[in-house]
Length: 157
Ligand code: SME
Image (cartoon, rainbow, N blue to C red; front, side):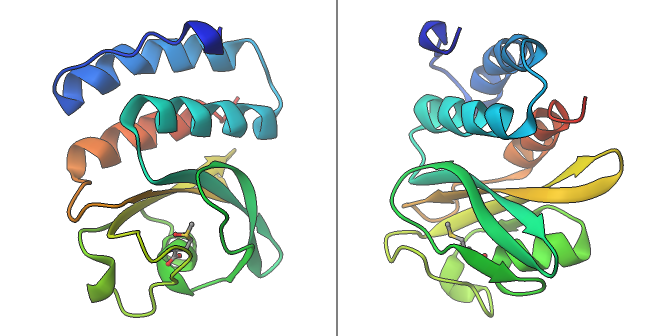
C-alpha cells in the first residue's frame, strides 16, 4: 500500500483531501500504533517534503523519540519544555511560524524555521505528539492543524 501512495499536487487542501482516505485505508489494515505512526510519518514526509516529520511518545514525565523521517533528533523532552512538551502539557495543537520567536523552543536541527505539534490521543489520553518541522518560515496554518488533527485521530482505534 505505502508503495502505492498516490501523491496529488495542488493546493494544501487538495493534497490533504487526496491523502486522507489513503491514510485511512493504510491504518485500517493495522492496529499497532507504532507501526501506524511509522507509516503516517513516512506518508506525510513524502507527500509534503517537510524537513522533519515524526512522533514523540509519552513515557512518564517525558516524551521519547518515536517513529520519524528526517535528520537525527533530540531523544527526550520534558513535559512543558519546547513546543512538543508545551503541546503535551496544554493538550492542544501549537503552530509556530518562526521557531526563534517561541520561548524555550528546543533546537534539534538549526535548519528548522517553523513547526507544528499536534497531540495524539488514544481513548482520551495523550500518548504522543506529532511534530513536523519545516526549513521555511510560516509553513503551517489552520488548514494543516485541522487535517493533521484528523489524521492523528486515525491512530485511535
Ligand atoms: N523543536 C521541538 C523539538 C523536537 S525537534 O524539532 C524534532 C520542540 O521545541 O519541542
